[in-house]
Length: 207
Image (tube, rainbow, N blue to C red; front, side, top):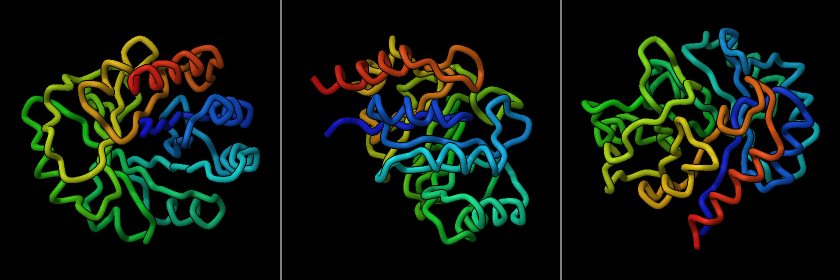
């Protein structure tokens, strides 16, 4: 089975269409005001309105107030929530939606313990640890830190691009890969050529 692909940090409807046309399985919308890829509710609805059926929409939050998440959920069709902050398992579960918990990996990270703590999650998203930054750093982490026996699906993120995604998939064997900066011409603006090259890399990993 081909590794699934999520294109994150979508800010424009045309980029959502481009991602799907090139084979992306999911798009990510960043509801974090401090992010250069932040979208408001109106932008999110516009991007989703352009999507064909069977494309998963993921909403990313970082230590957001529950009232804000509820407001987004009331107005935007999100299929999966992605929590990139210090949210506890109980906080992640309170919205009765499938969710992914992002873990910023460093050498002393116990991913098996995280898998136990967040066992209700549909996946763990593994990203690079950069002090003071919740995600979207464009940096990769040491993939050998991922144990081969994690008892839940892995979404691999952090510094992925067309040049390294095939290697990443072959080494980590994730369920899915997540890319943002690696397919951009500038922050928040996706590049069709880079998306196409990234998707070719994913396909090559299966050969």
